[in-house]
Length: 137
Length: 137
DNA sequence: GAGATCACTTACCTTTCGTAAGTACGTACA
DNA sequence: TGTACGTACTTACGAAAGGTAAGTGATCTC
Picture (cartoon, rainbow over the protein chains, first blue to last red):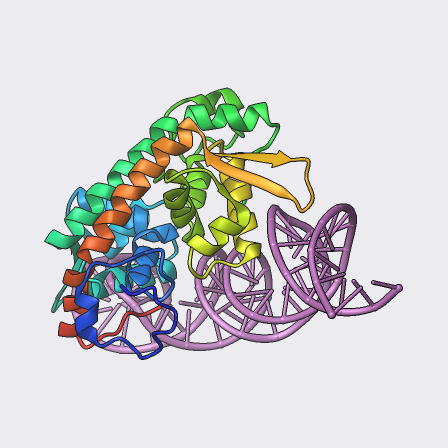
């Protein structure tokens, strides 16, 4: 990923086959990062790591997500090849979501970060308390 | 973190000293997740893992971040105890940011995820190409 | 016929982010 | 003296994204 600022030509797709550079604004890996670390993306990956889910199962498992945001999140993750959407010819509709092998790798890293945050919460809550700050927006 | 929906009383802070549960909507660990995985939070943690930086250094290192978003991001990470802000009595202003021990732990996990995304970009780009989709919003 | 199920989609309002300019103070230079 | 520069933010306002609520379509059950 070239960081040379005088390089103005749009990059051919073959150049995208090199390792990404998240610190470079224009690098397509930024899009992947955006999807994987999006507010609901992280949580969807974590739930799907436990196994295949239907849409409504995911909705219930991820507290607070709306159908709108869940649909959008799943679409993005599917486009990145992290999630597999399998639709059955049934009524009512039946759609199942599962992780691809690539998605499983992503979910492992996401899971590790999530675990760290969960287990570190008590320490972080002490910082909040010491500074008189509630968790902020 | 109780997921029992009939439990309506606000939780005393002492209850926050237990492990978080990111899947529970009301868990304060959600706030930490939001800050750590925010668009600019990830990248700031990665850059700070390499060492202490001044504001303008960070601005340059993270391609595309505005002063507004950088300031806000650093504020959030500081409140969570992940980043240490050290201000010197100088003009022009001189402020240095570095990771706390807690922040270093977070950055390690974030770094692992970022590395995976960067190295996986070629495979993901193949998915984009196979499905005729450019990276989307 | 009414109500339920499921996986979305749509309409509209609210919140957050991006862009650009401003702030304060010291220093350097024409 | 006036202008420009550096630094780390802050402010104002428009653009973009997210949240809430309702709608869609097809079948099934009572």
